[in-house]
Length: 68
Image 1 (spheres, one colour):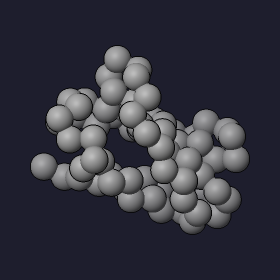
Image 2 (cartoon, rainbow, N blue to C red):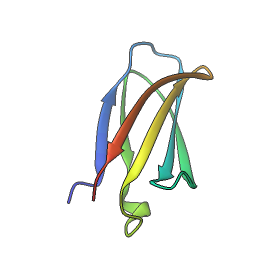
Image 3 (cartoon, rainbow, N blue to C red):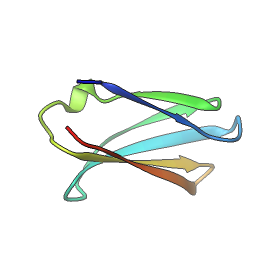
Image 4 (tube, one colour):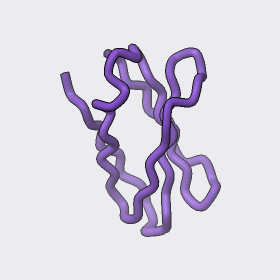
């Protein structure tokens, strides 16, 4: 089982990854700078499928569905 999920974004501005369970309940978030983020999902083990939404300067950028 993989515990991280790399996503490439375009700019070097501050970005935020927000993690939700499949029902839309907020689980947590991580901020990062740079064009690649490795979001460690191991702290959400046992939560089932998750949705990770990426924001760049308060602008929605991408969504990634993580199936467990």
